[in-house]
Image 1 (cartoon, rainbow, N blue to C red):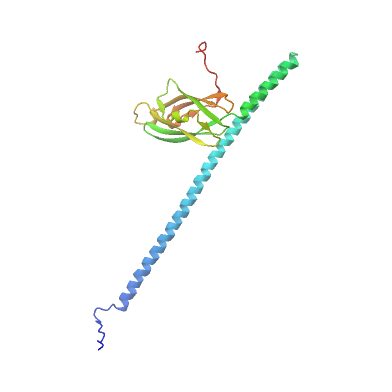
Image 2: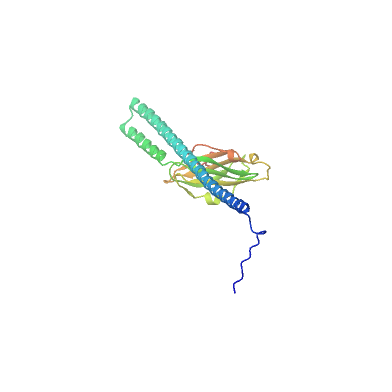
Amino acid sequence: MLLPLIVNLDTAPSILELIEAMGVIIALMAVAISLIQLVRKDKDKQQQINSLANLAEESKNQTLIFQSQLEKMEDSNELWKEHLEKITLLIASSQEFAQIQSEQALHAQNQRRADIKPRIVLRGGTAHRNTGSLKFMNVGELGIIKRVIPGEKNDIRILNEEDLINRELETGRAYSFEWAGKVESPSVFHNYFDIQVIIEDNTGFQYIFNLTGKGNHAKCSRLKEYVQKTDSTE
């Protein structure tokens, strides 16, 4: 026997309530779609930001390489200037041809050294109180760090010194001096760099450059020929 279906009209939802419920559902769906679009826009924005950051980093690298090329040209011009002056003096003083040939050979050697010379530039870094990381890059040819020599004004320690010694510095690759102040300090500006770094090229010829300044605001000098002191010159 089938029981009659009894519907309580008092508790059944009205058409207005159904419309309101559907309106809420549609509104929630619209919110969800908007959130998805916002997330996509945020991702697009983040990708654009990352792209701009990459372009800025690449631009900075290209600028450093260009500066290195200018430095290399300056070195080459200076070598040619010195060479021509010496050749002119030799010719004017009626020196033998063998001496002129010797000067030309010396010039060729110096030019070769300039062509394979490592060139170090700083790239900023991060710091907090008495610790930090000073980044640098070799924008010249292959180099090898041989020694790190602290100066009289130096009050920092190179924490990764052992890792850097005999490390090959490849062209275009970034490295860092991880450092810490010798004394606890409330500011990175109380930590002073005063160190010399000995670096050699792939033929064993050695150069020296200085790192001087406060914290990650330290400056790097241009590399020059390293002449090791003897007992008579110290």
